[in-house]
Image (cartoon, rainbow, N blue to C red):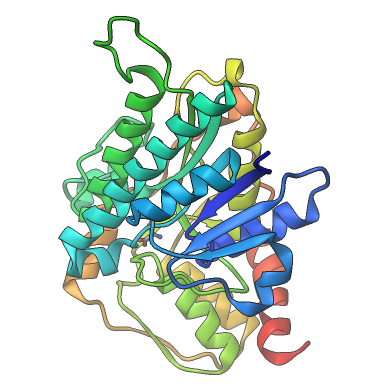
Length: 341
Ligand code: SER
C-alpha cells in the first residue's frame, strides 16, 4: 500500500521552512514529503520524511508521486515572488499558474483513488489587490476579499487567477459531464500580507524591504530601503503565518463560508519599522533610496486588509501585534541567529 503523506511544494522557501518546523513539532501527523526544485537545506532534512528535488512542471515526476504516495493534504507553496516574476512574466505564469494546475490535477487524481477529498492549502497574497492611486489607498477602509482586485504585477495576476482555479476545481469541475462528479479538491486559501521571519530571508519579493532592514541591522550592515518612509502595507510575523495555514487546514469544512480568506496582523510604514529596528539596534544605518518600479508596486497594495471572515469562520486571531512581533519574536530570535545570543 502507498504510505499516507502530506506533500509540501516549494518547501525550501521561507514559508516552507516554517511549516516543516511546525509539522515536525506536532504529534500524530502523517509523514511529510517535500518537493523543491532546489532540494532542501541540509539542516532541515532531519525534520522531513522524504525530500524530492524536482520541478512542479515535470509531469513525469508528479505521476511518480501518484504511484508512490497517498497524499492526504497538499501545501502548495512553490511560487516565484513578485519582484522576480516581473522580470520573467512568462516563467512566472508557468511556475505560478501551470504549476498550480498540475498540483490541482494531482489532487483530483489522488482523491479518486482515496475516495476522500484531498486538502489543498494555497497561500495567496495582498499582491492580488491593485489600488488605483495613493489617495484611494490612504482613504480606503481595510479591504475585504473582493474589493480592488485589479493587480498590477504578474505575480498578483497569477495568484488571483489561482484563487479562481481553486474555486473552479472545488465547486465547478466537470460541470458539463453527463454525471457531474466532485473533483475531491478541498481548496483552502489564505491571503497573506508581507511576511517577516527572524530565521530566513524571502527571495524576490517586493515586501522584502521590511525583513531586509531588520536582517541588515542585526548583521551590522547599512541598509537602503527601496521604498519611501511613508510606505505602508500590512505585515505578519512568520509564527502567525504558520498559525493561519494550519488553523485553516484544520477547520471543519462546513464552517468555511468561503474558499479565500484574508489574514492580517499589523500595518506599519517603512519608517515605523525603521524606528523600531533602530531602537533595538542603536546605530543601525537605514536610509531611503526609493526605486520607482518597486515603489509603485508597494503603493498599489492596500494599507490594511479586513480579515473578519477568517475571524468568524475559523476563529483566526494573530498572536503577534507589531509590538510583540518585533520585541518578543523578531528581535530576540534574530539576535540569537546572527550573534549567538
Ligand atoms: N511578499 C510577497 C512579495 O513581495 C507578496 O506576497 O512578492
